[in-house]
Amino acid sequence: MTDTAMAATALGKRFGRRGGWALRDCTFRLPAGRVCAVVGPNGAGKSTLLALAAGLLAPTEGRITVLGTDPASARARVGYVAQDKPLYPQLTVAETLRVGADLNPGRWDAETAERIVSAGDLDPRKKIRSLSGGQRTRVALALAFGKRPELLLLDEPMADLDPLARHELMGTLMARAAQHGTTIVMSSHVVAELEDSCDYLLLVGGGRVRLAGEIDDLLAAHTRVSTTTGSTGPTPADGSADSAPDNTPDGLPELAPHTVVESRVTGRQLTALVRPAGPLADDWRTSAPSLEELVLAYLRNPQAAPLTPAEPEEAAV
Ligand SMILES: Nc1ncnc2c1ncn2[C@@H]1O[C@H](COP(=O)(O)OP(=O)(O)OP(=O)(O)O)[C@@H](O)[C@H]1O
Image (cartoon, rainbow, N blue to C red; front, side):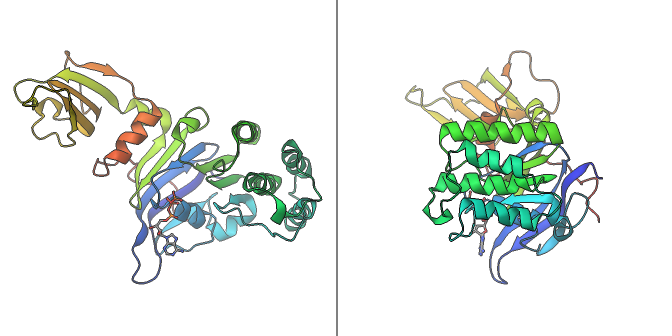
């Protein structure tokens, strides 16, 4: 038993010898039992990271461990739902679940798998090829849950589900995590939806991990500030209220020595999202950012300094 669900050290993946790096220099540790959101823009490397964890891709450099071992050795204890939800189109729903049972002797949780399918009103005699995208997702999730995994890797699991199905399946996910201590790693673009359900965040951008940690810790490390700038504040010549993003603290001495993720000057009003390096000036108004504000600020500012742990505690096998 390990208290680390996933750990990566200098992990990198390049497709083809001349291809660009899909993922580079990723180092993080995900404690067991967490519900982890993997967020980032299109092409950031989220699917690549999940496929490396599932053992479907081999790292080009560095290493990744899951459940204290290498991904191939952990496969029986890991459920993985890929973005395109691959299933056998010629099988029926019931046959698909039977394959799940056959492939997971001694582990298969038929009751849970059947409950997930029946909650979607799916006829078990229907062929997979005749199902809608959302119905296929439901079957793929039933297969993954039926495996009684210790770690569930879900690549945009909610993308093609209707709001009711999302709500219901998120509830099933959360109940599973709470009752069995299952670690869930879930990529998504809908950050607002993750705030209530996830407690750990990996923000991937440009193939690198830019934020990694407990969501509460990451939020606590950031503050939204606003203040009236002094003479250094660039006031628009026409006096208009147009705002311009300014992501460098140069020219904004008020923000030194803090790490600036994003700043904006509107007239003489300066607002910024910062990682305070010490006490903030008394005349600044401060507020706590939401998870969505935090993620959006990093996505809008790819050059903002990352915040990740230096070394995972249990990366070596
Ligand atoms: N099989 C592949 N062959 C070549 N390049 C690939 C392959 N898979 C992914 N890539 C590249 O790796 C990079 C990361 O892709 P990945 O699918 O991991 O991103 P993502 O964050 O999951 O994106 P999205 O949000 O659009 O699903 C992209 O530049 C992509 O073009």
